[in-house]
Length: 209
Image (cartoon, rainbow, N blue to C red; front, side, top):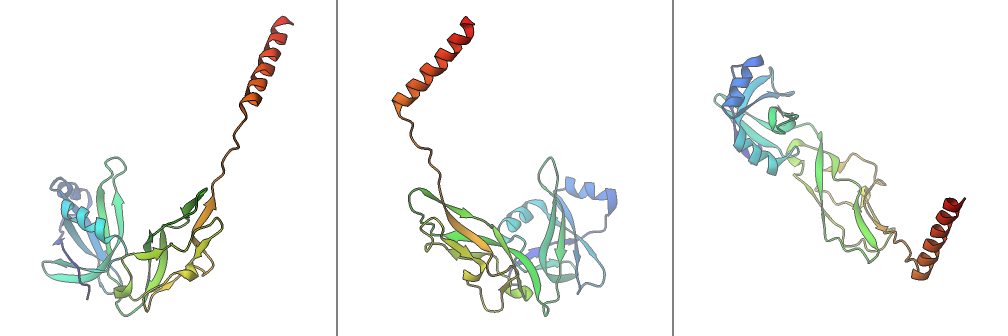
């Protein structure tokens, strides 16, 4: 079972009535998945969920408990209000713990150390992996200290995964790289002055004509 836990409540109100729940600072949601016979309507505390979701994200399996039941779930989807930018509905997915699942996991890069005149670039911020639900990592830590010069790249095949976890993307896909920074050549002061004189002279000729 999942180590982390979060409390919910059974929800009896549906449809337009859920507005009353939101006024009470509760977010409506559902629990669904292959191990759930019927969709279970629930609600969670707004503030508590905001803190929990910030640290948990989409890829952490945890136990959701309510009055008469519990399930190991992922946070599959969080609907956000387009104006207030706050969660208004949550989908909790209850997987079959014996079957592998796929999930997008954040990539966290450590120790960037590029040379002068170059820049470290993350080409991916997350990676889709496949594993048993309990083995899906919260994040993938990536050491990029070996990338130093322009042209150095880190590919999916270079990443190290825990046992039982595999990447869905091809091993040749780039996740980070060092790129050269273009620096515009310095313009000589005399050239700038000559250019300015030429432009001024051209304007005078046009005015005289």
